[in-house]
Image (cartoon, rainbow, N blue to C red; front, side, top):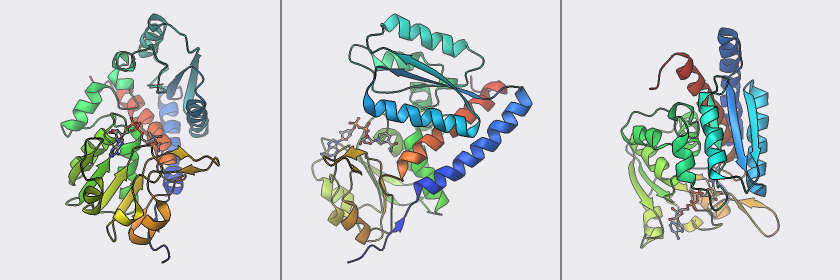
Length: 290
Ligand code: NAD
């Protein structure tokens, strides 16, 4: 069988979103006499984090967002890191604060993230922003789930009424993804390590989001004919290749539409981060969001 699914080109849609951000950043700079600013904080030198941080900073430069780099040693103290967040919260040149996760052991990520001013929380991880999304009044929305929704919209997908299954229930992807799909009118199932029959949950779904972090976790044969498949997973194989969580070749023979890895939600996530930064900058400048 050959692949029949439409490839959902996250790279192309991300380029479109970045183009919009670039225009908005120029308009912001013209109006306020300064570029919108994003502080990107990295603690330690985790190689995967360093790759993400570099691409985020580069994407800022390309779109006219000023990026403030804060690289701290893995052994930085809790007090010092909290003090940096407090400084960035008060800095009028900084509209968004991104704390690259995971933080080294010994630092309480919840405590650090909770200290970020919710108006500058461009990752959308602050409990206030998560709570607003849960209450159907989203403000700053977690970038990867928001990227799934934007990608679906760009391909004209009608989400309302769809049976959707999210595999993974993390605070970063799975949970906010479920809230986004609920907001979009889907009937949502969320799977996690306690799920008894993962195959059955995926087989029923007209839309599947995979966010576990294990290659081949979602079998191609489980995918319902014509379903839309969003593969958030990023895994590096022994040969150094990047793959998602879904068995791509077999899934693509059954799905109606599917995201590739790489080139799917990775670029979308960065694009939505930039878009959130402009949303934050505009809201702060207009005195909204408190
Ligand atoms: P995580 O480890 O925090 O969460 C994994 C989730 O999978 C958990 O909720 C767990 O309950 C669930 N899970 C584990 N085994 C399962 C099983 N057998 N059946 C059902 N559920 C199971 O991971 P995360 O931070 O949510 O990231 C998930 C993946 O997405 C990773 O590969 C990560 O690299 C990737 N990711 C990609 C982007 C992007 O930009 N594309 C952004 C964030 C994360």
